[in-house]
Image (cartoon, rainbow, N blue to C red; front, top):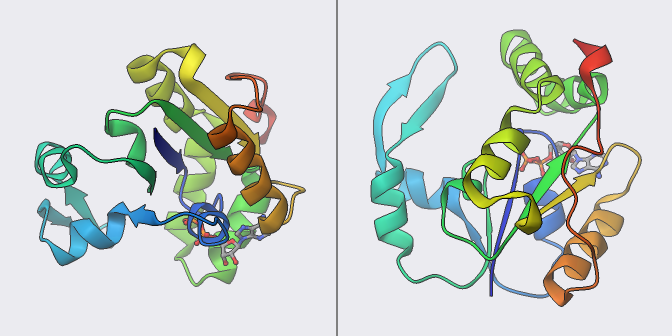
Length: 165
Ligand code: ADP
């Protein structure tokens, strides 16, 4: 079973998956440590990942992989963590992100960018949207465990943050 946990930066992927009782592949660490990127995006203070190299590096993976890029991997189930854009912006600012980065990610979240990419690649039947806005990391981890166990129905598009644009 391959479960990809994705979502806009700040939705809580790292925090929630660190509470799971299974090993987690943190893709962003792999990308940085193995140099699986093509260029540095100075405006965003981030690396542009080489997705083909990432797919090759993870190979025949299993378990849980987390990253805002995890939905670009082949996977059996894709969890998309969501967060209300104004709350997301606060989380990112509190984490020390620049104003520009916090705003850009909040807009991207309002526009369902990652959810749309996940549905385009995997189809709605394999996508599980989890709204983390009013849930603790432990509750989110329990929701992810329910996906892994097959105890949760797929869902995509139930969350609507367009009013926050
Ligand atoms: P991601 O890995 O998706 O970028 P993080 O796990 O790093 O997100 O979380 C971003 C910030 O939001 C951190 O400061 C974290 O403490 C906080 N956070 C994560 N999950 C929650 C949650 N469920 N409720 C409130 N704050 C959270």
